[in-house]
Image: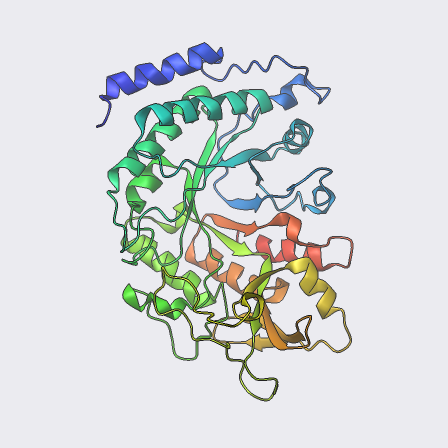
Length: 394
């Protein structure tokens, strides 16, 4: 049941008035830690036309990654759940937006719960002086559990209106998926209607291993494509194309790339043979891995932070290899029991190729998961990763 528009607007205005902050007047009730009171308030400029969106630079405090951020590149810092006020102030001092990742699922049709959630989001923004939100509502509906699209569309429109009523300069984005035209997962999303309510979508172009399982939907891949590449260039190309077919232009897309890799366990110890998993890939893209009696750590691919890959690449025995079909790097390695594995990842070289293509396609920008994954003190790797992202924007 949808609220009449006039009722929805009155409820939103009441929420703002109760919070004491109608139309951008922010009252935190606590001293500003910045020295300059203006730095404790949101930026009063429109969202940027081009984005370099940095997810999760500070999973814990003290924030070790903060000093490694390239402030000439980044436009938005996205904190995951908690935004330290002193870091929000510092972002504002540099003219950069600070937003918070949030989500509400599966209660997208629970009207009273949505109102409580909106009130909490607005209160947090007032307290911390943040510049908007990134909605992370993943996996809503699949071919096994179909859901109606309208409840999610209504909820996103409602939170977007509320955030902008409180702060007219706020940025509101939402995370998306690769291959949005698929019919087998994330089925509860009307991508055009969602994009119309938002500043932009952030397709999460990672964790895309075994993308040829997309045969259930519209995911045709070129011959020679490796299923071990989680963020292949063809996947970027098809995702932008599919969003356009659904009515979402490239200017509404900020493509998020992985700053981590995957370890792939190999069934054969012979490095002259192609690496094959010890078990078959899942036949059901919504199902689990058929590990059987094999211990799971050596059965399935596992995420590897880029800082670990940096350390492995520094070894004299490491040999950087390249998969041209996906534009992805990989190295041979061993697990802790001495078993053979490959680690597939993106580095500055492969990210640069993808970033240049994204710019040529006219996307709004690029982001990464996560800014805290790199060891910035180890070498120039961190700066080179930022340099690669810069290639996606003018």
